[in-house]
Amino acid sequence: MEFITEFEENTNDYSKKIKDSVYIENVKPMSVKGIEDICEIIIGANEIEYQSISTIEKQKFIRDKKLEIASGIKNANYAKKFSQSMIQNGLQSINHFSSILYLNELYKVNCIIYNNDSNKYYSTTVKNYEPLYCVYRNNSWFQLNDMVDSEKQNFSEITELSSVLTLDYPSLFIYQQFLESLSKYKVKDLEGIAETQGVSLVDGKGKKKIKKDLYDDINLKHYIQDI
Image 1 (cartoon, one colour):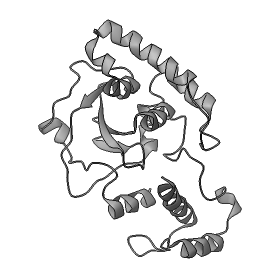
Image 2: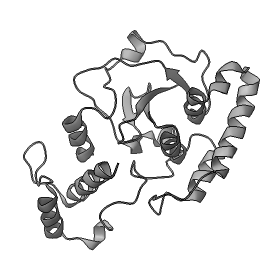
Image 3: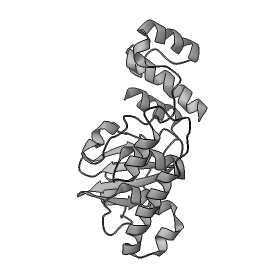
Image 4: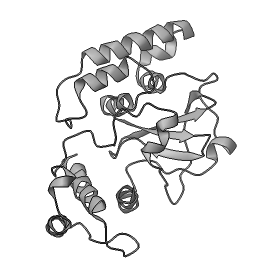
């Protein structure tokens, strides 16, 4: 969405910048064999014990760790839709988007996904966390050590990942937002709020923002400020 793009260009720091095709030309995957569940990459990269055990032991370790994490979820200022039951259900399966969102917060990382099939990149948080690079290729997941910076970062819409993830949550915003539901506001209402909050009424091309973009930009500003 446009408001995410504008935010990235303005701050230029909440995640590493990525060069197209760097995966193919310059970087070797850490994983020799692909992994079925992206959660294994996120957990394995942040749990020291995982690095020193055998492949067979790793499968059990990840299964037990996901159950441990699921049972230890505490109430937070999460959005109503990002419920405890959703997170727990996701962690008991594989490749659920809610699991990535929760593990990002647990380990303070930004899981950046590169879909080799479409040659597109996806950031899974708006927070300035250390990036963790994951590649989807041939129905498997691989971890990369790094990706090279470039002058412009281009992240695609999370909705495009429906072919590789179970998108059980619709956005990157897992905490309660500043505004109430979109249906409660008229365009004029949002324009007035935007002006008082210092949010521009026009996009990067000088065109007047539509209602949804204004709503998202106002929420985004407060979401980042709260962080």
